[in-house]
Length: 195
Image (cartoon, rainbow, N blue to C red; front, side, top):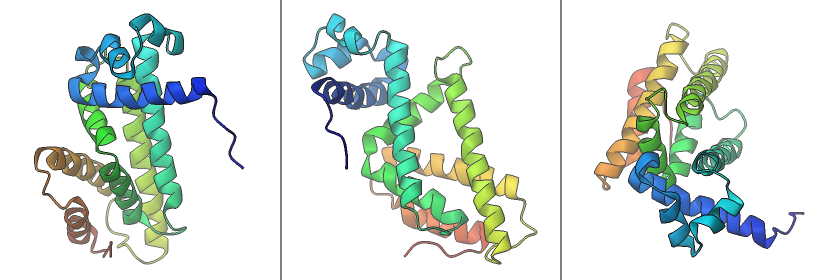
């Protein structure tokens, strides 16, 4: 049974969801606490009651996004395999374009070592690669993936492809991301994925 959320928890969630839109559209550096506060009907001081700093709000948006990815991966069928992990993440992002825009915008900004989310993104990319490498090894053991393919290289290629496809989707809304992903995975690994 799910616990009932308090009005404060609901307000925090509303603020985080609004920050996703503001930071996704304007970036962290250009988006302001005032922009977020105005959008949710608070003063900047009222927003600081929920999140003491802009950085704290940024981290809450990233945590919120991370939980969405965990949920997407948990919905993947047990043993769904190497390529299905990426497909589930892409599907989740396509269902939440604000998160997709936030991720693309912030990951580019966070290449600067001084950015408050720099370490988050360094760790996130490493976790993503490790997740794919683990699933890759499972695919090799199951006989679904050729063992001569380098797991580290394939994982890096899939992470890069997923980021690139999401960026292209933002620039070219008609792109069929999942079809493109499925085709590229088949060409890279010889594995059929998707429906």
